[in-house]
Image (cartoon, rainbow over all chains, first blue to last red; front, side):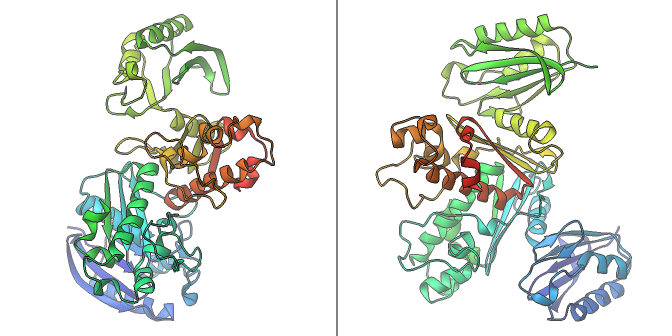
Length: 243
Length: 243
């Protein structure tokens, strides 16, 4: 069978792997994301050269990205700005590269082998340090002028919201990410999400904002499945509250 | 050249036409939407039989609709509920029928021959008696479990909103349609939109809600163009306020 390569490129780490089957990866390896892209990429390229011939390589990366050029664009990680990630991989490894955002990669994975297996209309949200979303409609990933930025959906203040809390998004303050990301929970309550028990009022607020996001993507895309992932969703009680 | 038929099916009237070119329709004819679907459809079928052979027929209809069966589903127009619109047209006219919502039809028209000519990622809103939206992404109309229902996007109360106004949507009260449709304007101010001059405070509220809708569809779909249509948008000053 053909062997494929995979990269999840994040602001903290790159995860690299090879395999014949997306559910049975070989040699998953973590490479720290350096301030110097050349350093990180040398390690990534070395990994794949040692892994042997690949039929193709799939990249799900932090963004924002430009699909036309395969570059990371206006990231706050200044040394990675305008880094031609796709081109470097194609040139150094001589392999076809599939290139998309991290959340579109996760949406595709959930639709092909995960919680929405076989579904052609699916939205995936990650709720963690940031909030992002990817979408598949009619079996194809949504791209446009750039890509979805669902973390910045507008939300209404929840009725129980703390009067003094104005959100943590550096761009908008009180957008979805500003009100419902892990750092928003920590800023509001002074404790990290995982330290708050299931009865803490934090979770009613969190469920309100995430439910609003689900409603709005339902109005726009009418997905069959919405998948909620990311560290904050590891709270087992939260999904039912959102529902 | 091949001749095509077109139907815009609305709750008040059906507009029917034939033509070789979507920008030069022949014989545009209005047929009242009867309480009795059989009566309306007899007139529609008679029109197309007289119009002569068609290569295909395109239908943009009020909804909600079910794409699998080509039916109108839970419309408040009770006599039209579950009406098999596509099947009746196919059977009676022996022609291939393209079938979609009115707003998806408008989105397609704007992307092919209108304000977004040549654009593959476009959202169309109509703002009138109701609010609806249709979307094209990657050149294809968005369908999902059903279809977009962008009129029911959640919006934040505008800072200048009247304290006593709670919106007119029979389902949600203060969703986009509840706050920004023509009937919302009339309920809030006691006058129809077209009677309010350009300096009336109505327009700041209207622009706020429609801008929120544009932001949210941009976060989800990243369209290259958003087209705003419908009766309320005939106010020439409103577009720049939204922008």
